[in-house]
Length: 115
Picture 1 (spheres, rainbow, N blue to C red):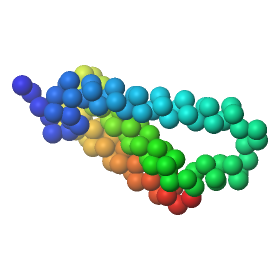
Picture 2 (cartoon, helix red, strand yellow):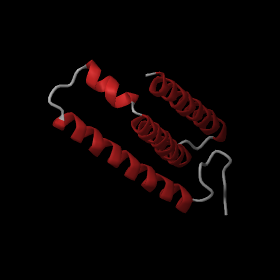
Picture 3 (cartoon, helix red, strand yellow):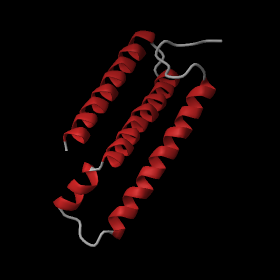
Picture 4 (cartoon, rainbow, N blue to C red):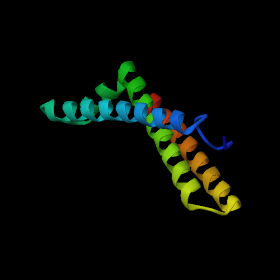
């Protein structure tokens, strides 16, 4: 069995399961968010502020953000291992993706909990 230090899961099956779970979380978030938008009489700053000030929605949003990061990382890891053959270039690319995903997660958490 071939493993990689940059893989999120222990195996392809593990990565597949993580991607399916994150997809379900993202689908639930999008469905709720679209329902909120279409059911709101008026959407203005006070409505958005009230929605994002609730702890349960901050946690749900942070879970959705983490799901995007994990989902994107697994997808980019698979693409990079399939299409970037030189090991050095692939590792640099994967390191960039890891840093970008981590930065987005931290920045998103700061934005969510700063409201």
